Image (cartoon, rainbow, N blue to C red; front, top):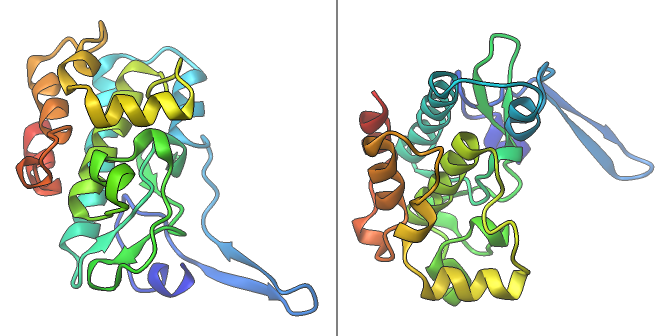
Length: 207
């Protein structure tokens, strides 16, 4: 994580300052700027936010993912979700927690959070740029609705739901008032990874 963070720089990706290592206990701490407003989930729960403010956060998150995915070589975050995005002092979102991140050409083991995971990740342990986009769709959904994916289901039920159910049911939320936004989520949740948009296309849809 330290090696990866030290190479990248973008307004919507957490800044790497350095790290401190305690040799005796073999514990290391990564140093980053303080996130004044905490993670996105807590930030949104702290007040009443209009849709325009939420969409601004979507744009920030999509821009950060676009940077990672267009880096050379591309970077797969591997664990996109609202608690892995913080809100800085200016109210902009920054992606954090690169413990699951991998350069796309060096993916060897997969660490992910089940409720945000794509069908191919759950079925075949496949993590890719496209699986990031699936998780990005759920992160968008969290920001807009203020809820956690599959919040009333146990893990086993979540797996069956993701593998067998279709996206329209998930996009049918009262908070998704804008058709363009609904369409974007539907695209992110395409079962065929090849049919999902790129991060750049997600940014384009949010402009």
